[in-house]
Image (cartoon, rainbow, N blue to C red; front, side, top):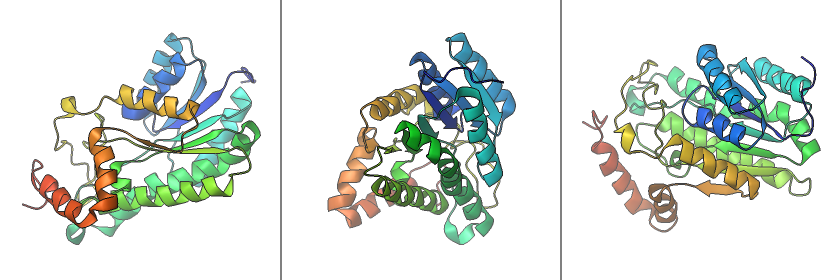
Length: 273
């Protein structure tokens, strides 16, 4: 495929086959971006592609495991071959876990770190030269778990804290180059991430401990992320819960520890019980 257009802005979105990633792709289509979407589930990815194309977007979809460095490099090469530029990279691919650390296989922690942290590192590394050409934006879709460590999510919180450190360092390195870096921290969002969260043995828990219908819609998160990108924000904290967690952790961290414990203890099938 030759270059489709090098005038429209191009966004690359990982983990785009469902949830926030799917919503990001559809919002990008509405905003007239050329779109590159990637995920492991090709059939779902192709469905998202068709829905974005129905909105008038030009879309490239590629099967991708962000844990594999070479696949991340190929993703960016294909984006450039197809569209000629990369303006925004949204590191959205992610996986969660739910188990007490004392009961958890270490491979579960490693798998979560590989997807959430190393996936972000690999994709950012290979997109960076092209982003610098456009004075573009790197986005890390993080979580309130990257602000406050969450019990029974040790691997997940560790991966998001690592993402924060990596992207904040990258931002400071490029203060004079025009590169923008956004850390987006949604609160609990309706998505498949809790259903697919790994248990202590590395199997999907299959059932969310929350009523997903009462959580923040993925589309609202996606719209807020693109608004923050366009405003060149460095941080985005969504939901009252997320903003309150940030504030309480700054001024009352020990009290917040107790509150977080009580909150997790009330979850369906809580690991504390």
